[in-house]
Length: 214
Image (cartoon, rainbow, N blue to C red):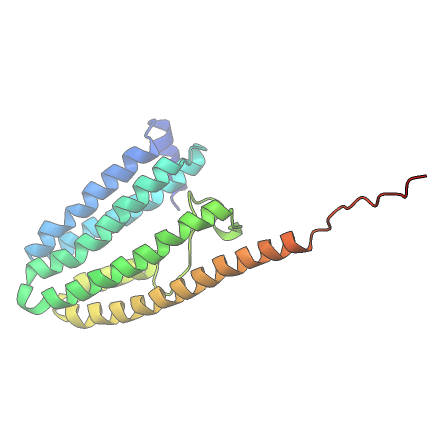
C-alpha cells in the first residue's frame, strides 16, 4: 500500500532519515493537542506519525540504504514518541490521568529496555534472525509491540474518559511482555553460549602419536 508513496519520495530524492525526523516532529505535535483535549486532532498526528514511520523503512529498503545509524535514529525517536503520548494525557487531566500515565511509562521503560538490551549481546554473538532480516538490529518478540501500542493510542483518543482503565490494561499486558522478553532473551543467550561451549568441547583434538625410535 505504501509503494506509490515510496516511489514518489524516491523520485523527489527524499532520504529515509529525513522522513524519520519529519515523522517524529509530526508525532510530537499530538502532545499539545492532547493537553488541550483536542482528541481527534491529536489522533490525526498520531496516525500520520505511524504512516511516516512505515514509509521511512520502506524507502530505505527501496533505496537499498538501510544503515545502523538510520535504525538507531528511528528506534530512539519511536520510543520518545511512545513516551510522549501518555504524558499528553497526564497534562490534559492530571488528577485523573497522572498516576495511570506514570504506571504506563514505567512499563514502557521495561518493555523498551528488555527489547533493546537483547540486541547488544545478540549482535555480538551473531544470532540468526530470519524473520527480521530487513531490520537494522535484533528484535525480541513480545505480547505488546508496535501494532498493539498504536491500537491503544487510538483507543485513548477515541475514549479519553477511559484513559486510566485503558492505560492500566495496556500496562498489564506490557508487564507480561517484560517477563516473557527477559525470560526468552536470557534463555536464548544462555542456550546459545552453552551450545557454543559444547561444540568447542567436543571438537576432536589432533594428537600425533610418536613412533618408537629405531
